Amino acid sequence: MKQLVAYITSGFPDKNFTIDLALALGENGVDTLELGVPFSDPVADGPVIEEANHRSLASGFRFSDLLEVSAVIAPKIDTLWMGYFNPFYQYGMEKLLDEAKRIGINGLIIPDVPYEEAKAYHSLFEARGLANITFVAPTDGEERIATITAQAHKFIYLVAYAGITGSGKAEDLAPILSMIKRHTSTPVYVGFGVNELTAREKVVGADGVIVGSTIVDVLLNDTFSNTQKIIKCCEITRNIKSLINS
Image (cartoon, rainbow, N blue to C red; front, side, top):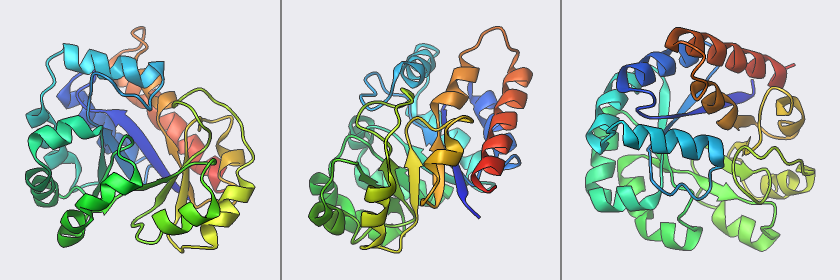
């Protein structure tokens, strides 16, 4: 069974909605939740997720809110925190990972920390049994892929193209997927540009997909009520889960 990871932005439009949406997604095809930590400069994300980040911060989101919603969500669905390094560093990495472990978070996704810098924190993650998700890009050579996947845990995040989330570019991922699988048995999930139109194509040769912008785009649609937003997002995830396994 191919896996579906779904990204949502914490605190957007509010904490209760985040909890309701997360739990609903867990009942509608989502295997792992990528719970986004709002940040003012999300450099790897496109305009959709960037706008959701800004709206969450403007509404008063605080790091304590992340801990609060995570404590409700994590016991019920496999949950990862996705965020940029600055807020994590300011909080304190040891304290952060202790909180993650206590709450039941299973790992972090930090897109702006390259492998060489992430190594400094490897022992902190290992000691707590938490994953620090490894990124691989289509531009990585085989030697580098062998190096950065050697200690990969949970899954490898294959960036589907060079650029930002949500732009929907298409690239032939077969060569890079084959290269990764020569060096590791860790599952490989494809992210960036995954939606109902592209999911079946992008999952070929991979073990799952990561969906973000197509969900957050629904949340930004102010013509929908909160209930309608949850219904629509669940329709999307059910459909994608079916597509990647058909």
